[in-house]
Length: 389
Image 1 (tube, rainbow, N blue to C red):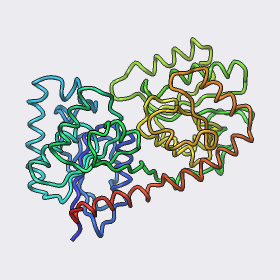
Image 2: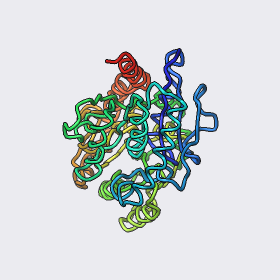
Image 3: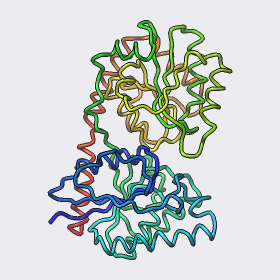
Image 4: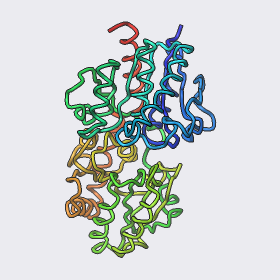
């Protein structure tokens, strides 16, 4: 019989963690594994037709601790005695579900579910996997997570060496499995001219693109400031901003638009919002930029590389594990506007360099970061756990 794997993700909106989980659920070998997903009652990230063969239980009420949008430990779940008391209710509910479902493995996908579903799995004597997708700074959240790990004894998947390092060596049973992406839709655009025309790009214009949630740590402010420096020298330059506001930062997009206007580049920035045609937009662009702070991995970077785009990104988090500086893109220091502008300027000024780095980027993306590689490594971990290794 296939082993039953129960996945737990509390998120309402879609993010990289949910996209990655859907990739796993879609491709999991049904001859070996039987997946069940426990999610929020208003999980908007589920597609209209969920992956075939996945049992879905909408387990978490929006008003409850696991139904809240923000995946925060310190100041949220761990912020008060009231929150801790409220957390006991979903733990009991999850324990009852695990007793009923009798999973061979519980696989948690978010910080809150690591603690709450982890506690329930521990009490139900179920094998446990934490899929760790965040770089946690020193502080209460990290201490709580490590304290729970010592009690629950999960196998931990870290999505990059940087995420693994953030545990400070305090927990040893950690395996790095990169966030693979379904790259079948990400390739050099066959109808590039038509896509550019639909985006209002002139043939002569060089387009820089950023894809990601509008949240401060993604580095949009720095990119706008650096872009303005280069745009003052290069009249045929455009910036495409793809993404919507993050869970709790309603005013951030307005702040960014005001900054662009103050820098005098308001008419040269296209705010495209959430898009389902990201491969097309990447195909229309010439350069991909993501000057983020402590990016745990960088799924959007991999997608851009698969589209043969050279990357300008920061030398922090998991990004240097993806981008080879000087070969598939250019890496800069975090928060250094002049350095970021210099990297953009270098690529803007050389079409040949863009082509060379883009070709190398696609080769690297396909060889290291395709989703089939990720799923096979996750399945191998499950096999070891089931065999008692």
